[in-house]
Amino acid sequence: MRVLCVEDDPRIAADVGAALSAAGFVVDVSRDGEDAWFRGDTEDYALVVLDLGLPALDGLSVLERWRAAGRTMPVLVLTARGSWVERVRGIDAGADDYLPKPFRMEELVARARALVRRAAGHPAPAIVVGDVVVDPRRTSVSRAGSPVSLSPLEYRLLAYLAHHRGRVVPAGELMEQLHGDDDARDQNALEALVARLRRKIGPGVIETRRGFGYTIPDGPG
Amino acid sequence: MRVLCVEDDPRIAADVGAALSAAGFVVDVSRDGEDAWFRGDTEDYALVVLDLGLPALDGLSVLERWRAAGRTMPVLVLTARGSWVERVRGIDAGADDYLPKPFRMEELVARARALVRRAAGHPAPAIVVGDVVVDPRRTSVSRAGSPVSLSPLEYRLLAYLAHHRGRVVPAGELMEQLHGDDDARDQNALEALVARLRRKIGPGVIETRRGFGYTIPDGPG
DNA sequence: CGGCGGCCGTCAGCATCCCGTCAGCGGGAG
DNA sequence: CTCCCGCTGACGGGATGCTGACGGCCGCCG
Image (cartoon, rainbow over all chains, first blue to last red; front, side, top):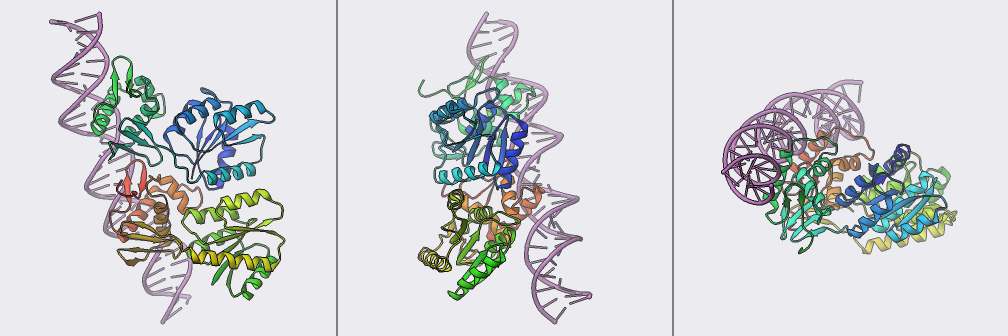
């Protein structure tokens, strides 16, 4: 059972991660909103524990974007005690439960279990772009109904573009996403990767915007 | 009719054991979570009476691990009176009924009988994957009609994959499930285990997704 | 108590595949 | 036309996963 913990404070992140691990969850930790957004979009989590004060991208914005993209995994929001404004905003954004800080780890684990159990039977939806389906839950991709076997890098590239469909993604951003670090490698490596990916999923999906980057067009536009 | 009673308080364990024995059950007693987990995983019980406050491993964690491994025997949870949180957690974790402490032995026996009777009418669903049948209730596996003898680890691996068929399970998650802790051991141990399991159940059941993990494909997809 | 068999972690060798790199080519923009 | 960005086929190093073999550990039985 995988859980994403979004928390920029290293000490709290470590405590929460330890408590959830001890409870039998597999825990991934995100330290900023950008990374959390991408992970929640591309990976399959049974639960997200979300702190609101985040660098790079606000926690509530992350949650809103997930919901706008159709992601339905349960989200447990950590709020400052008494901050009922945040709580209302969280409800509007689609949070499932709240925990005021500071909290006891036992309570966090208990609520996490309850949310996971309640959400059982609500499968995460796949992302559909034209006749291409990216299913993060199964880590599988299919085109026109027939499955396509992708390598890890190819899958991450396609997933990232699919979640940013309609936007032109610069090559540098893609390289950074694919390799996690800011290691500026040879651009041709990305081009070769795109070529191999295109050969597998067929033409008409990933388009090149010369001088800008790559994109998956949104809708019939 | 075998019953597992998981209770660390010797006096309560003796009382419950006596009452259930008088009712015609054969009673095994576990005093800590580790032992209970192992017994519930390897033996076939018609019912488990589970106390939550346990040494070595929390009762609810034990229950969750049983369910994750595909064990479906009815579980009756003993909770502290008024502990509404524990009740919710227990039911969410897959408990079939609960009984607040202190309780009268007649009520325990009545509920135990009801659970066993209800479970008898609903045989545990076997998981069928091609010509391989995994029966969680009997902890048995057969292929093309003939039984296959698996070791405990092999069975748990197969049961977990079958329970999550259709999705790609990362190696780390499998290791965690198999060993209960977060001990990140040598990955080759898992590969060797998969190899031995494949040799027993034949090819075409467990597939490898290089770079992602292992999966049992769901249906024709 | 000692042998024994099953279970499972470890190791080494090998096959396979991923992916970065290179060289050459084509096509759009100025 | 010329330049330059991007595409593609080929290649090879290295990572990933499979397999046979071995040995430690534990329970069982003589």
